[in-house]
Every structure is written in structure tokens, then in C-alpha cells.
Image (cartoon, rainbow, N blue to C red; front, side, top):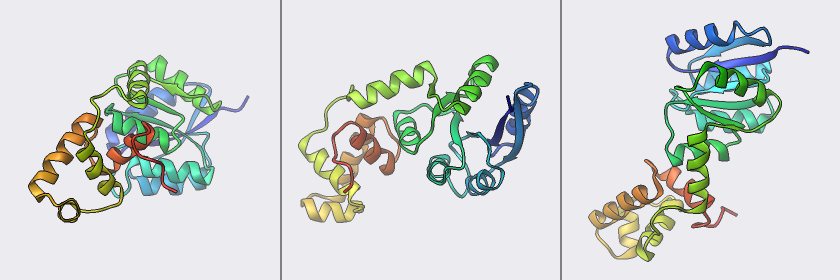
Amino acid sequence: MSPVRLLIVDDHPIVREGLRAVLGTEPDIDVVGECGSGTEAVRLAADLRPDVVLMDLRLPDLDGVEATRRIVAAGSAGVLVLTTYDTDGDIVRAVAAGATGYLLKDCPRQELTAAVRAAARGETVLAATVAAKLVTSVRGGRPALTPRELDVLRCIAAGRSNPETGRLLFISETTVKSHVTRIFEKLSVNDRTAAVTVAIARGILAPPA
């Protein structure tokens, strides 16, 4: 059986070196390349055709979620996320982008190597804490949004700025910002894109037509 062809993507050279040292010694895993940016990851995935891309989320020029989306859409490889971030928004966005797995960087070596092999077989691999958060997120295990917060969230989904939202809803920009803050807290996210993604996953917002 051919070794699993692996591409490592992380913006920290020392992390890439460590991952190569750990995974490259496995007889059935062949590290065929590495890079430190999302744009380069998309290019190398297309050129090298690895079986699995080990993807960090925080990358310069193109984040790991968007890089994952492009790699999966092109059919270049399966993507296994390896990151330090385990917020609901990050998890949902990565899974929605097509990632076949999501692990945290503090996972044991055996778990990481097993996950790479599983991802190469097309199996879904989630760290236990990540799986629990994903289930909770999809089930909506957080305080419900108020009607006004839903109005603001719909404006966010429509791409409206805070001033535009305030004018549309006849409230001040300061009030809009307060609503946005509470929405982020209730959805356990840190940005507008993640808020919309989580809201769609939970059924709070309808998917885009």
C-alpha cells in the first residue's frame, strides 16, 4: 500500500519542522511538501496532489478556512485541521468549508498520526472536545437571540455595516455595536463571518439561496 502523501501548512517554521520530524518518521506517511500561507497551500495542493493537507487556521494572506474551501472544491486533497483554536465559530466554519477532521495542537502524537491515516481514508476525525462543541453548536445549546438581535444578525448576513444597520432599524450605532457584541457572545464567535456561519448551522438563519 502506498504511503499517505501529506502536505503540512503552518505559518510557523518551527512548528512545520516539528510536524515533519514527527510525521516524516512514520513508514506509511510521506511528507511531500510544506508551506506557511493559505495561498501557497492551495497552489501546492493542486501541484503535489497530496492525500491529506494538515492545515493551520491562522495564516497570512488567506486563512485556513478559505484555503480549505478552495482545496476541497478543487478536489485536490482531504484537509485535516490542526490548530490551537477550538471556538465554536472556528470549528463550524472549518467543517462547513469541507475539512474532514479537526484536531488541536496539544493532541498526542499517536492521535495525530492516526488522524492523518484516517483522513487519507476519507474518514471524519474530530478531537473529543471539538466534537462536543460542534454538537452543542448545531443543537443551539446557547442563550437564544432576542428579536432585535435577530434583526441585527440579518443585517450582518446581508453585509450591512453598523451605521447602515442603525439607520435601517432606527437605532443608534452604539446600540448596534452592543447588539453585535451580545450576538458574538451568544454564538461563541469572534467575527461577523463566523456569526453568520454558526447561525446558519443552527437554523437561526436560512442558508443563502
